[in-house]
Length: 395
Image 1 (cartoon, rainbow, N blue to C red):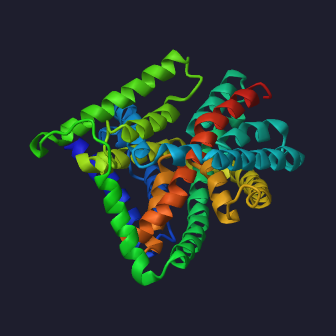
Image 2: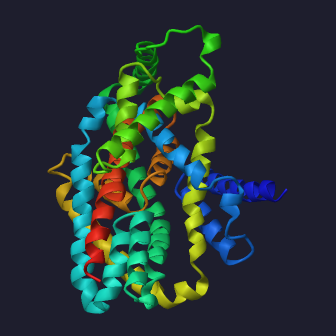
Image 3: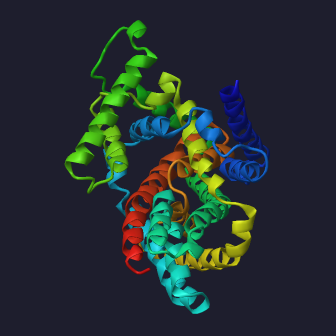
């Protein structure tokens, strides 16, 4: 009974987030509301282990993450993936803007250890926050131990609505572009027909009768590709993150016909895995308390403001040379605040909210989703770990 109650609690938080997002037409993202609910819950009556009790623990995540990333690879083409080198550059240079402003101005306002402890989580995800926490403990700087994870918590909450605003502006711009290419009366039909035609033209390695194309058959192939990506990453001694390899292998598997497009939705388990992964991410909010936040909130907010300003300046200056709108460039850089799966969910919600039909939504997603996913991997999966490793030596 306890496990079912825990699962119910998690799903109620998810449901409220989705309803608020729908009610506000994604102006308030679902992940923002859900994060707030989890934080308040952990500070009041919700058990700290509610997510693991709901079955979304480490084992679940070890399976869900690589399979979800392989699935997302099936939504892209090799051409689209290769074309995202500009998104990688923008995202990384945005992080550089954050580093420059926080280390220069931030160190004039706060002591050096405070800045060094807080900046890596600001430019990356949970991994860098945990690395800095361990480093502070090892060096006996106990007064700042709560700072990295608290920074991760607060900057994520701020980053969700800010990214949503950028993506919404970009979505409206893309729709104007979409309708300018052809008249509204014909473009929707043409685009819809094109999507259907593309689905029919998909390569298929397995031309089995329909009764054999079951959900388990899809999941077996996804698991095989996910396992291969983990194995290849281990062969490379993790020089390339297994998550990045999973995304690339997902693209390749779809292109050669081993996996169909949108594989997890066809298997009927995409939402289940995504909810579990989100719950696991929000479970990290259980390490903070109002008392801890009260003692370090000023440092966190000032450094976040400096970091976002540095990111904005870099994105605004570099957007035109890299052929993006400044809103899209800034959104790419902002993926460093949260990464996957929040970047996927925010992009999907905004595309759905600004579009009137499937053709418009597909067009918006085509021009935003690859940029957001690849930008997030460049910052959170790669850059943040490197930055944290360097900053540990600066403590």
